[in-house]
Picture 1 (cartoon, rainbow, N blue to C red):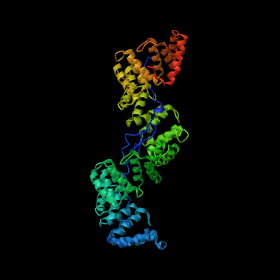
Picture 2 (spheres, rainbow, N blue to C red):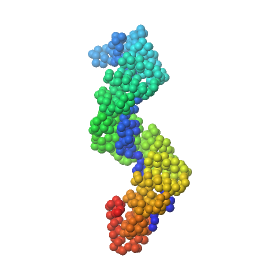
Picture 3 (cartoon, rainbow, N blue to C red):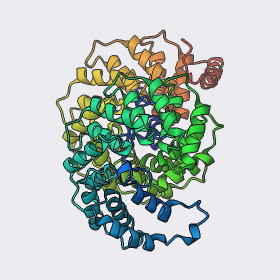
Picture 4 (tube, one colour):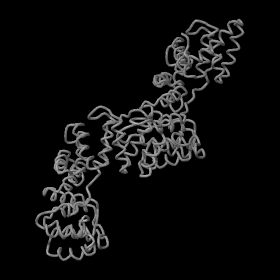
Amino acid sequence: MRCVAGAWRPTQRSNNTVAGGWPSALLRRADGGFPHNGGPSAQANKLHNVAAHGRACAPADCAQRRAPACASNEVLLNILLHDADSDAAADRPGEAGALALIRPLAAPDSGAAQNNLGLMYANGQGVSQDPVEALKWYALAAHQGYAPAQYNLGYAYANGQGTAADAAQALHWYQQSAQQGVALAQANLGLMYASGQGVAQDFEQAMQWYRMAAQQGEPTAQFNLGVMYANGQGVAQDFTMALACYEAAAEQGDASAKFNLGAMHANGQGGAQDFARAQAFYQEAAEAGDATAQYGLGVMHANGQGVAQDFTQARKWYGLAAAQGHIHAQFNLGFLYANGQGVARDDARALDWYRLAAEQGDAAAQYNLGVIYSLGQGTAQDHAQALLWYRKAADQGDAYAQSNLGLMCHNGQGMARDYVQAFQWYQMAAAQGDAYAEFNLGVLYANGQGVGRDYAQALHWFSLAAAQDDAAAQYHLGVLYHLGQGVAQDAAKAVHWYRLAAAQRHPQAQGDLGSMYAKGEGVLQDFVRSHSWFNVAAVSGNAEAAKGRDQVAQQMTTQQIGQAQKMARELKQRHFQDFD
C-alpha cells in the first residue's frame, strides 16, 4: 500500500513562481523600492543616485553669467539674442546679425565676446554648428581668466565636444571657473570629485563644492547634495537634510528631485511614510517626463499605494517609462501582459517586453524569458533558448535561474543529461536559500546522481527545503524517517512530515498518511482515517491510494466507510489539515 516512488524526482518550477511584481528603482534595482515578488525590498532604503553621479550642468550662457570686466559686450549679446520681452524685439538683427556684430568684438581679446562666439558655434546660432570652432573661442576667453568660458571649456572637455574627452582638462577648467564663483562649475566639480573623474574620489571635496553651488541656488547641486546626505557620503547620513535639499531643487522644477522626494516619502525616510505625498511628487516628476518617476507611479498604481489600485493606470505609466528605455518598466509591462493585469493577457507581448529588459541585462527578465521558452508561452517551446536565457541570469547570480538551469541539466532538456552540472547549479542556488534547489540537491544525494549517494546529506537538504514549506521536501523527509535512511527510523516523525505535505495537497503524502493509519505506524491504527486519506489521495490522482482505499474497505463496516467518506469531505473543508 506504499505510494513512494522508486526513484527520487527533481521538482519542476512552474511559471507561477516566476519573479513577478515590482522591480525597484527607487522603488527597485536601479536603486530603491519594490522587488520582483511585489513585497517590500531589501533595496528600499537606497535612493535614486543615478542622476546624482551622472548629471552635469549644461554650458553656461554668458547673458546669465556676466562678469563686470566686459559688461558692454555681454549686454549687447543679451539685447541681440535674449531680450525677448523688449518692445524693440522685431528690430533686432537676429542670430546672423548678432554673429556679424560679435565677431569684431571678439578680436580685441574680449573674453565675453569670445565666449559668446563660442556659444554661437556650439549651438549653431547664425552659423553652422561647429564644436571645434566653439572650443577654440572658449579657450581664448578661458585663458584670459573669463569664468563662464572656463566653465564651458571644462564642459566641452568633460563631454568630448570639439575634442577628445579629457577628464583632467575638464577638472582643471572647472576648478578655475569654480574658484571665481560660477555655480555651474562648482556643481560639476563636485560631481567629478563624487564620481572620481579625473581625480581621486573624494566625497568631502564633493560636498564642499556642492554646498557652494547650492547656496547660489543651483538646482543640480541641491539635488546632488541631497543624495550625498541621503547616502551618507562625505557626511553623516541625514534624511532630514536630504529632504531639504531635494525640496529646494524641486521648487525650481527639478524632476529628479521631485522623484527622490516621492521615494523618501514612500520609504518613510526623514518622516513618516506617506504614500499620498509620494504619489503627488511622482506625478509631478512623471508629467515632466522623468522615466523613473513614471515607473514609480506605475508601481504605486499597481500596488494601490497612495492611490486606488489600478492596473490600467500602472500599464499607462510603465508604458511611458518603457518607451524611454526604462529597464524595470519594461519588465513590469511584460509582467502585466503575462498576467492580464490592466490589459488582455498577451504572452507574445509579454515576451517582447521581457526581451527588451533582458537585453539590457535585467536578470529577472532573463529568467522569465527562460521560463517562457521552456514552457512555450507566446512562442514555440525552445529549450535551447531557455538554456541561453537561464544561463545569462544565472551568471548574474539569480538563484531561480541557477535552480532551473540545474533542472534542465538534470532532465537533459536542451542538452545531454548532466548530473554533475545539475549538482553545481543546484549548489549555487541552494547557497542563496532557494527551496527548489535545496530539494533537488537532496534528490541527487538520495539517488547518487552527480555525487556519491548520501542519505544524511539528502536529509539535510530536504530539511532545509521543508522548513520553507516545500511540500515535496516535506514528503521525502517523511520517507527518510519512515525508512530510516540517513537517520534513525522514526514513524512518528514520518507521520509529522506526511501531514505537512498532505495539507499542501501532495497526493503521495496523502496516500502514505493513509498507509500509516492502516498499519498503525507512528499513529494508532485507524481504518476510518486511513480510508479518508486514501480517498483524498485517490481523488488527487494517486492510483496506488485508490487500491489502498479498496483494500482497507474490505476490513471496514458499511457504517465505518460512511464515516470515512464524511471525514474525507471534512478534510477538504479543513484544507487537508489532519484531525490530530
